[in-house]
Length: 77
Image (cartoon, rainbow, N blue to C red):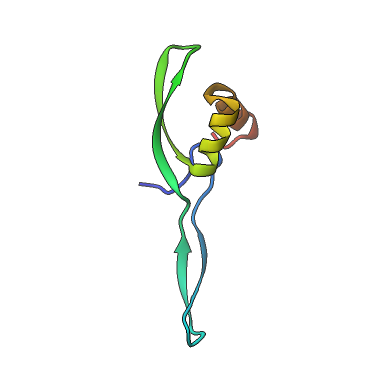
């Protein structure tokens, strides 16, 4: 299962875990992804998307249809 947001295209990034002794080891920062169902009233269908929590806030602000259209224009969907 890929760790990529369907709307924003967010992926995991790399970084360092820094211990108390300041020793650095590689680690990954994964996006906070949630699997959610959204109702599209124009088509009368439910769609399932794997979205980040920041994308969820955008969907609640703009609505599912306009958020998907925005992602299509941006090229991430």
